[in-house]
Length: 277
Length: 296
Image (cartoon, rainbow over all chains, first blue to last red; front, side):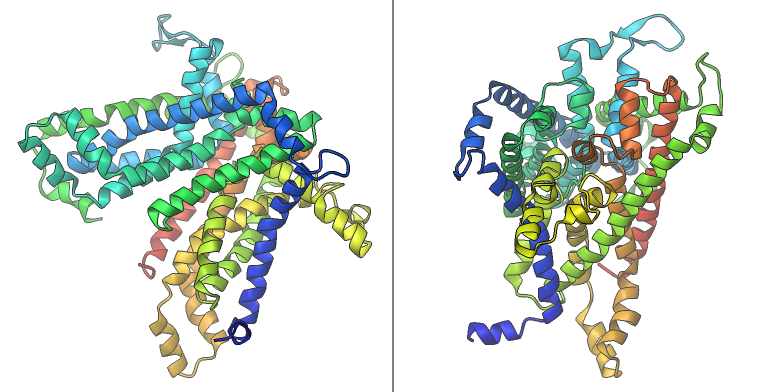
């Protein structure tokens, strides 16, 4: 079949919608890319990228965001995998409650979450009706702020992480695997780490990458908790620079693209979305 | 579904049952510390006055303070418009690659791109739109230099309601594509054939069979889009610097410093948002249940 006759068989309106959609997708990226290349007058080049990547503050904040993302992913896995596993194995009656909790982040936007976290943890937390302090204000020192922001990110990623893991476990026979491992004398730790985890690794990878995409550019929690992460840095850079923010925006688009691309690849097109921030 | 029904028929002895709950305790503690405590604190705060006593004043103030009402209204308007616009456009796009007859490779390209774009929000998105439709943006210059049409002289402004809506659309319609493509796949070929055998035209098929079947999922998806835009903060703040006082930006100002001189009013504003989000999510799950009847 020649190209022309193939083209003739393409429905007109479908093609129109598709082209419009493609333009909406591509034009802003093209514009950002073009703008980021024009830092030097009359020269097209990667100067803006060189300058942006060489900035010490960029390296620090970006590294810090990657650290936060990794911690969020690790902690989420530690929290969610055993929970989802246990519910499948022993406690199906908790499923509704836990699923309800994992949906709550959809109702509580990031700005509300950080508002609440600050209200609760910027004062010492007392045992109810007494003056006994359990936790000193977490917002006052770096370790405390890290706990808050990683906890907050875990909440933001919770719906995606939980659903990935739970879907992953649906495809493996958790009960049989557990019984087999138990009859070979494996401990609970061994079962979860060496039997269950490897069996849901695809699901974990897609949940982890999605969490990564959410956390690395995240700006609301980071800026309100005063954490020097990449999101707030990029925002501030945009206040007094023109070309470097464009370069970094384009880079972060490529990062999102990479994360989503890998998810599509490993899950065979069943990827998820996080939505706006 | 059947897994949920199981424990009712074969109840284990209550004692071991209770012991089993230990397995989810870490998760529940996490939820209490990072979800419940913050929400409960905001909830209690919205019904407390500065002396720490119960009051309804904060909540009633939401409805009497003009600027708060305006902020809610602005947020609702922008979310509804981008949900509707993004919903319609996203539906047409999903249509074009599923039942619309476009070649298969275009479909996977669109789905992948939608996955990326729906996650591409916040500060980078705002900067991308400044490079595109800002005063010296790419499209602005092309329209001016090639077509001689200066959009900024004709009332367009990126840092306005329209500009923010266009920016939100970038993550709205891809989300619609991702939700609608599987739903459109669920339309059975037999329905169309049966309709055609009975002499229905294509328009009749769409208006009387396909759209009614799809309606719950279309509306449900649009509600999701609404919530998606309603909770957004970073994109709007990075783009307009707070000049467009949507409700999230007002709450943000509350967190930064007490501009209202009444912290509990801020709590009430936050709870109002949660309330609206909760209603939309309830509507979504209701529609979701209706959808499952047809699309398996």
